[in-house]
Amino acid sequence: MIVTSRSNERIKAARALQDAKARKETGLHLIEGDKLVFDAAASGARIRTVFAKEGADTPDGIETVFVSDDVMDALCAAKTPQNLCAVVETPDCACPETYPDGLIVALDRLQDPGNLGTILRTADALGAGGVLLSPDSADPFSPKALRAAMGSTYHLPVFVGELGTELPRLKAQGFVCVCGHLSGSETLPAIGRRTALIVGNEGRGVSEETAAQCTLYRMPMRGRAESLNAAVFAALMMQTILNRMPE
Image 1: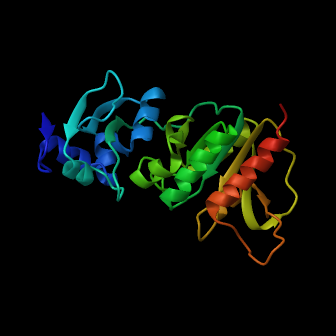
Image 2: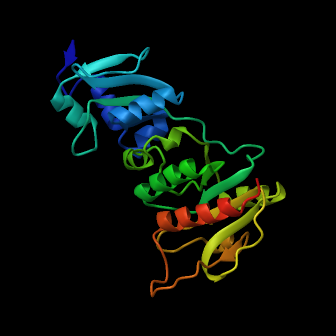
């Protein structure tokens, strides 16, 4: 049987997950695209339902609902939907008692979901220990953030917590906290096996409260630009820090 009506209750419930309020209320999110669905399944994500176009390959052992092209268009936020999308249980993003060794990337009020997804993907590629988001940052499980992360959301821990609480805890656990700041030094502090990189809001940078917990660093600029896109800055800083981190 192929679902052909956008008014089908299961289709309406899945479409609603494009909205942040529905994601929060249900503890579910919607992922789009063949690669992302298969990658989420392989990574152990708890997939409730896969929606698929007729004839599409689907992950084994997961309930699949076949839908018409028109219904798939309605389910997906992307302008050109692929063959699959899926409803997935949102993982627990509570902060841990003890943070993992390595690099923790903390995001202070980062607003653009594309930047967030790109930072998650870069952190995954470079081997960071996890990403910590302030509660007023963009939603890592929004469609745009998930597309930008390209599956990395399921590859490394994603934590959500108040930085005013978590940064002191990180410091108490031996982390050096470094944040980008126009008033900072152009010399990085000594990098150990536990370092937290804090990336601020795209327009306003880190808050004063966050800055007070950190060593401030200003990336040297050879050209005339005063600052970088948040995701670009994060990528350059992650690479620099990880290259200096002892084995």
